Length: 295
Length: 295
Image (cartoon, rainbow over all chains, first blue to last red; front, side):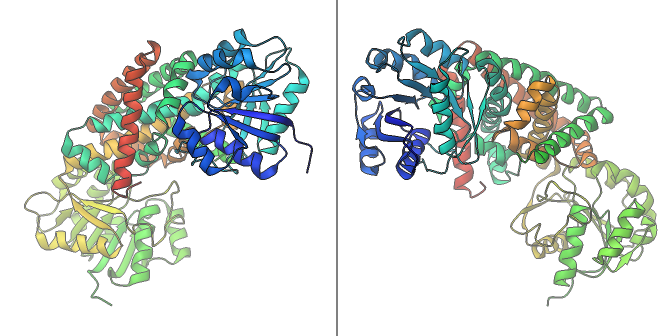
């Protein structure tokens, strides 16, 4: 077994992602010698104790991070500022502070001002998840073969960055580095906008007259059914993502909206060629994904 | 083996759906004694001959339908009017004319005026498909466990309707009956609007600056990836569906659009409760689908 990357790792928040990290750490043994978990809700902590997936369960986040050389925030991104206020005074010198949030500009915005001088901020976004949440939903294989995007700021200690890289490598992920703004724009397209659309179309269906809605649920075909799958996501997590990637998301929604209206207009006026072009572009993107083995 | 439902069945068009019907007919033997296929493109007919999935391959649709007691249109819905002009004078007295199109108001509109007096129109929509097309893409199990919606007009000969019911039952489908307008509204929500959205978001991604687009393809996450899957559909078929379910589709697009803008506005102004409510409704619809075993 390789030398553990960290001596004492604290997971702040232990839902799907946090508990999956805990399970990888337990399975491999070379992520950290000791894993501490803390969470806001006593029920979560009680359940984590029952599951026995970490070494130490601690209800006070300030105490939880004490003496840790790595702290990973695994709470919804909207909770970062509040958590950071609680833990910042207790972070050990030289600590590597990372996270798993789906927005990165907001993470830098909320964490950087409170960072102690000797701490290293290395934001990370493991692109993995399921429609389930909570400590029971995690599993050690969640990150295997998935991208993990790091968004360290220029000038961050390269040793700290390399530790976080190696951490995710051992979780089975493929590591990429982006600046926070580019990251946020890309995830707005590949994940946040599709979720906004999925939530919306479910709401649109829910608003239909009862009889029609019943029939929609009965005949839910591929398409609608696939949309509902991603619409089953965690409420707090997605509210926070939307609010913390506001600009990129609204920009992409505006582009999408213009494009949807253009296609709607072509349908209205019977512009077959325009419609065919749009469908062909869908097929083209699909083909390109298949060529990249991302389909 | 049960008595075959029809003596001589003609499939006009033999792509994914037509060739799947042919394969069911061949496998079971009790759909029709003889299966005739015709198609517009000589390559398709040559391929069907090679595949050996029908008894007779005929390049002239007028000849193909002669002497048939059942004719099923399996071409894109936009081609119905043209096909009907060709075949109507050659339909046998008492023939059951059906189809497999995804729009039903347009089918009645295009076929009814040309129906010979002694023919029976029983429109059908098997809700089954894959992202592939052409006679090689079909398979005998395609319709198993899927809904098939019939939209006969009031006053249609019940014997003809029952034959079409039994036909799809033997294909493994669950049969439902709706009026054409209700059918069109429902499929606009469960299938046509999701496809319009999927084509659109692919186009939106395709329009991004090259560098961002590359990253989008690279990191295509669940959500975007799922959308591209349904965007890989057949161009002619979907152009025709959009143009032939214009009103219901535009009505649903307008509702969806309003809802998407309302959610976008809530993101802009940080209205957390509104956002949470939308996400919860997505989860609720998902749960209702799961309860109905449609997920």
